[in-house]
Length: 236
Image (tube, rainbow, N blue to C red):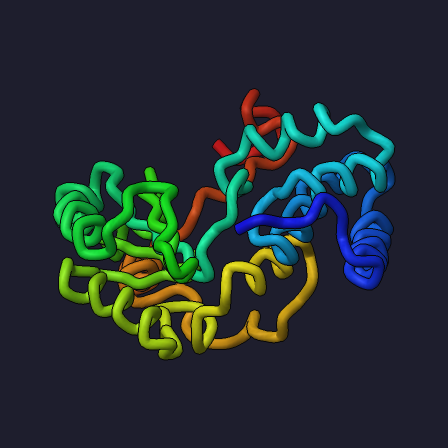
Protein backbone atom coordinates (compact mmCIF):
# COMPACT_ATOMS: atom_id res chain seq x y z
CA UNK A 1 0.00 0.00 0.00
CA UNK A 2 1.69 3.16 -1.17
CA UNK A 3 1.39 6.37 0.80
CA UNK A 4 2.17 9.91 -0.22
CA UNK A 5 5.29 11.46 1.29
CA UNK A 6 3.23 14.06 3.17
CA UNK A 7 -0.21 14.22 4.73
CA UNK A 8 -3.15 16.07 3.31
CA UNK A 9 -3.41 19.42 5.17
CA UNK A 10 -6.59 18.45 7.01
CA UNK A 11 -5.13 15.10 8.09
CA UNK A 12 -1.93 16.68 9.36
CA UNK A 13 -3.92 19.32 11.21
CA UNK A 14 -5.90 16.62 13.01
CA UNK A 15 -2.76 14.68 13.92
CA UNK A 16 -1.16 17.82 15.31
CA UNK A 17 -4.30 18.62 17.30
CA UNK A 18 -4.35 15.13 18.79
CA UNK A 19 -0.61 15.23 19.40
CA UNK A 20 -0.99 18.44 21.40
CA UNK A 21 -3.42 16.64 23.73
CA UNK A 22 -0.91 13.83 24.21
CA UNK A 23 1.98 16.23 24.81
CA UNK A 24 0.01 18.01 27.53
CA UNK A 25 0.33 14.87 29.67
CA UNK A 26 4.12 14.87 29.76
CA UNK A 27 6.51 17.31 31.50
CA UNK A 28 9.14 16.51 28.86
CA UNK A 29 7.87 16.40 25.31
CA UNK A 30 10.11 13.56 24.12
CA UNK A 31 8.40 11.26 26.63
CA UNK A 32 5.39 11.34 24.32
CA UNK A 33 7.20 9.57 21.51
CA UNK A 34 5.57 6.17 22.09
CA UNK A 35 1.92 7.30 22.18
CA UNK A 36 2.59 9.54 19.18
CA UNK A 37 3.84 6.54 17.22
CA UNK A 38 0.62 4.74 18.11
CA UNK A 39 -1.25 7.82 16.91
CA UNK A 40 0.55 7.58 13.56
CA UNK A 41 -0.41 3.92 13.33
CA UNK A 42 -4.04 4.85 13.97
CA UNK A 43 -3.90 6.92 10.79
CA UNK A 44 -1.52 5.00 8.51
CA UNK A 45 -1.72 1.48 9.92
CA UNK A 46 2.04 1.44 10.54
CA UNK A 47 4.91 3.75 11.45
CA UNK A 48 5.12 5.29 8.02
CA UNK A 49 8.09 7.37 6.83
CA UNK A 50 5.89 10.48 6.71
CA UNK A 51 4.68 9.70 10.24
CA UNK A 52 8.25 9.38 11.50
CA UNK A 53 9.06 12.77 9.98
CA UNK A 54 6.02 14.42 11.54
CA UNK A 55 6.63 12.97 15.01
CA UNK A 56 10.26 14.09 14.86
CA UNK A 57 9.15 17.61 13.89
CA UNK A 58 6.52 17.79 16.63
CA UNK A 59 8.95 16.61 19.33
CA UNK A 60 12.02 18.47 18.08
CA UNK A 61 13.90 15.19 17.56
CA UNK A 62 15.77 13.74 14.61
CA UNK A 63 14.20 11.14 12.37
CA UNK A 64 16.91 8.73 13.55
CA UNK A 65 15.83 9.17 17.18
CA UNK A 66 12.20 8.47 16.35
CA UNK A 67 13.07 5.54 14.09
CA UNK A 68 15.20 4.03 16.87
CA UNK A 69 12.09 3.69 19.02
CA UNK A 70 9.85 2.57 16.15
CA UNK A 71 12.25 -0.23 15.25
CA UNK A 72 12.90 -1.39 18.82
CA UNK A 73 9.37 -2.37 19.90
CA UNK A 74 7.56 -5.12 18.04
CA UNK A 75 4.15 -3.49 18.43
CA UNK A 76 5.28 -0.74 16.05
CA UNK A 77 4.97 -1.85 12.43
CA UNK A 78 7.33 -0.80 9.66
CA UNK A 79 4.96 -1.87 6.90
CA UNK A 80 1.15 -1.72 6.67
CA UNK A 81 -0.61 -3.98 9.15
CA UNK A 82 -3.82 -5.80 8.38
CA UNK A 83 -7.18 -4.60 9.62
CA UNK A 84 -7.06 -7.43 12.14
CA UNK A 85 -3.84 -8.64 13.76
CA UNK A 86 -4.24 -12.32 14.66
CA UNK A 87 -1.59 -13.39 17.16
CA UNK A 88 -1.07 -17.02 18.14
CA UNK A 89 0.83 -17.72 21.34
CA UNK A 90 3.43 -20.46 20.93
CA UNK A 91 5.28 -19.92 24.21
CA UNK A 92 5.83 -22.89 26.53
CA UNK A 93 2.41 -23.49 28.07
CA UNK A 94 0.34 -22.50 25.05
CA UNK A 95 2.63 -24.57 22.84
CA UNK A 96 2.18 -27.80 24.80
CA UNK A 97 -1.56 -27.15 25.07
CA UNK A 98 -1.86 -26.92 21.29
CA UNK A 99 -0.54 -23.52 20.29
CA UNK A 100 2.05 -24.93 17.92
CA UNK A 101 -0.59 -26.99 16.14
CA UNK A 102 -2.90 -23.97 15.90
CA UNK A 103 -0.08 -21.92 14.40
CA UNK A 104 0.88 -24.56 11.85
CA UNK A 105 -2.68 -25.09 10.69
CA UNK A 106 -3.61 -21.41 10.72
CA UNK A 107 -0.63 -20.28 8.67
CA UNK A 108 -1.45 -22.90 6.05
CA UNK A 109 -5.14 -21.97 6.14
CA UNK A 110 -4.55 -18.22 5.78
CA UNK A 111 -1.59 -18.57 3.42
CA UNK A 112 0.81 -16.16 5.14
CA UNK A 113 3.51 -16.45 7.79
CA UNK A 114 4.40 -14.41 10.85
CA UNK A 115 4.29 -10.64 10.34
CA UNK A 116 2.80 -11.16 6.90
CA UNK A 117 -0.51 -9.76 5.64
CA UNK A 118 -3.08 -11.24 3.32
CA UNK A 119 -3.44 -9.69 -0.13
CA UNK A 120 -6.80 -8.15 0.77
CA UNK A 121 -5.24 -6.32 3.74
CA UNK A 122 -7.65 -7.94 6.19
CA UNK A 123 -5.40 -10.17 8.29
CA UNK A 124 -1.86 -10.01 9.61
CA UNK A 125 -0.64 -13.15 11.34
CA UNK A 126 1.82 -12.93 14.20
CA UNK A 127 3.56 -15.68 16.14
CA UNK A 128 3.63 -14.40 19.71
CA UNK A 129 5.87 -15.35 22.59
CA UNK A 130 3.26 -14.77 25.28
CA UNK A 131 -0.25 -13.37 25.48
CA UNK A 132 -0.20 -13.25 29.32
CA UNK A 133 -3.23 -15.54 29.41
CA UNK A 134 -1.60 -18.83 30.49
CA UNK A 135 -4.63 -19.86 32.56
CA UNK A 136 -6.61 -20.07 29.32
CA UNK A 137 -4.00 -21.73 27.11
CA UNK A 138 -3.85 -21.96 24.19
CA UNK A 139 -4.73 -18.34 23.54
CA UNK A 140 -5.18 -16.37 20.33
CA UNK A 141 -5.38 -12.58 20.38
CA UNK A 142 -7.06 -10.45 17.74
CA UNK A 143 -5.98 -6.82 17.97
CA UNK A 144 -4.92 -7.68 21.53
CA UNK A 145 -8.31 -8.99 22.65
CA UNK A 146 -8.43 -12.47 24.18
CA UNK A 147 -9.81 -15.59 22.54
CA UNK A 148 -9.26 -18.28 25.15
CA UNK A 149 -8.97 -22.09 25.04
CA UNK A 150 -8.55 -22.18 21.30
CA UNK A 151 -8.38 -25.11 18.89
CA UNK A 152 -7.30 -25.17 15.24
CA UNK A 153 -10.97 -25.21 14.25
CA UNK A 154 -11.98 -22.26 16.43
CA UNK A 155 -8.96 -20.25 15.25
CA UNK A 156 -9.93 -20.90 11.63
CA UNK A 157 -13.46 -19.76 12.46
CA UNK A 158 -12.05 -16.44 13.69
CA UNK A 159 -10.34 -16.00 10.33
CA UNK A 160 -13.52 -16.98 8.46
CA UNK A 161 -15.53 -14.41 10.44
CA UNK A 162 -12.99 -11.69 9.65
CA UNK A 163 -13.14 -12.52 5.97
CA UNK A 164 -16.95 -12.50 6.09
CA UNK A 165 -17.03 -9.08 7.76
CA UNK A 166 -18.66 -10.40 10.93
CA UNK A 167 -18.17 -8.86 14.36
CA UNK A 168 -15.70 -10.76 16.53
CA UNK A 169 -16.68 -11.33 20.16
CA UNK A 170 -13.68 -11.96 22.44
CA UNK A 171 -13.80 -14.21 25.48
CA UNK A 172 -12.96 -11.32 27.77
CA UNK A 173 -12.87 -7.56 27.34
CA UNK A 174 -15.09 -5.43 25.07
CA UNK A 175 -18.21 -6.71 23.41
CA UNK A 176 -16.50 -6.85 20.03
CA UNK A 177 -13.02 -6.54 18.56
CA UNK A 178 -12.28 -3.19 17.00
CA UNK A 179 -9.98 -2.60 14.06
CA UNK A 180 -6.22 -2.27 14.29
CA UNK A 181 -6.36 1.47 13.63
CA UNK A 182 -9.11 1.97 16.23
CA UNK A 183 -7.11 0.08 18.85
CA UNK A 184 -3.99 2.07 17.98
CA UNK A 185 -5.86 5.26 18.79
CA UNK A 186 -6.68 3.83 22.22
CA UNK A 187 -3.01 2.95 22.72
CA UNK A 188 -2.19 6.55 21.85
CA UNK A 189 -4.23 7.53 24.89
CA UNK A 190 -7.70 8.31 23.58
CA UNK A 191 -10.63 6.59 25.32
CA UNK A 192 -13.06 4.67 23.12
CA UNK A 193 -15.82 4.17 25.70
CA UNK A 194 -15.50 0.37 25.86
CA UNK A 195 -13.35 0.01 28.97
CA UNK A 196 -16.17 -1.32 31.18
CA UNK A 197 -17.58 -3.81 28.71
CA UNK A 198 -17.43 -7.57 29.13
CA UNK A 199 -15.58 -9.76 31.59
CA UNK A 200 -12.23 -8.68 32.97
CA UNK A 201 -10.84 -11.58 35.01
CA UNK A 202 -12.45 -14.95 34.31
CA UNK A 203 -13.06 -17.97 36.53
CA UNK A 204 -9.64 -19.54 35.98
CA UNK A 205 -7.83 -16.31 36.87
CA UNK A 206 -9.82 -15.89 40.08
CA UNK A 207 -9.61 -19.50 41.28
CA UNK A 208 -6.57 -18.94 43.48
CA UNK A 209 -8.24 -15.94 45.14
CA UNK A 210 -11.38 -17.99 45.80
CA UNK A 211 -9.36 -20.79 47.43
CA UNK A 212 -7.45 -18.31 49.58
CA UNK A 213 -10.66 -16.70 50.81
CA UNK A 214 -12.25 -20.08 51.55
CA UNK A 215 -9.18 -21.10 53.58
CA UNK A 216 -8.88 -17.76 55.32
CA UNK A 217 -5.44 -17.13 53.86
CA UNK A 218 -4.14 -13.59 53.74
CA UNK A 219 -1.01 -11.93 52.46
CA UNK A 220 1.75 -11.20 55.00
CA UNK A 221 1.34 -7.79 56.57
CA UNK A 222 4.18 -5.24 56.57
CA UNK A 223 6.20 -5.29 59.77
CA UNK A 224 6.11 -2.28 62.06
CA UNK A 225 9.23 -0.15 62.40
CA UNK A 226 11.93 -2.01 64.30
CA UNK A 227 10.31 -5.42 63.87
CA UNK A 228 13.27 -6.79 61.97
CA UNK A 229 15.45 -6.19 65.04
CA UNK A 230 12.87 -7.43 67.53
CA UNK A 231 12.71 -4.02 69.15
CA UNK A 232 9.67 -2.47 70.81
CA UNK A 233 6.71 -1.98 68.50
CA UNK A 234 7.66 -4.83 66.24
CA UNK A 235 6.01 -8.23 65.90
CA UNK A 236 8.13 -11.28 66.72
